[in-house]
Image 1 (cartoon, rainbow, N blue to C red):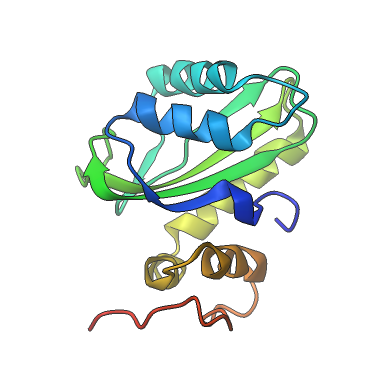
Image 2: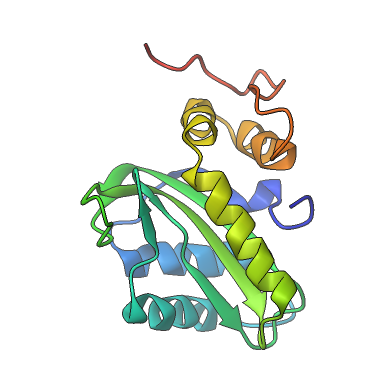
Length: 163
């Protein structure tokens, strides 16, 4: 997880209004000077999503795709103030997206990453702590701590959770 998500790939005030816009945001954030272009990344995510929804429920989605030309796995985290329809199994609109991109062809290690991310964002306590993060640093720290130390990240970037 430590090399998967970087601070510059975390946006907490995203303004996506559809799945396609979210995928385009992921493409822009995941783009490196070498490798696949943002529109290719968005296309791969859209093609994968067309097979079945990657929404997990609880306002979370985990879109993922194999991307030819990608040098190493990359994660992007987006949170929007306006949730969107994502065909979630619980019917809840999605406002948090954790996208995983892996090189094509995928390996067993890449599928393990997807499983680990699924476990993370499916964990109620993890989601509560994630919702309390109000700056990218807090999100990044939370992802770095998994699965150990499921306490609030030490950064002042964490807001008190409501209630």
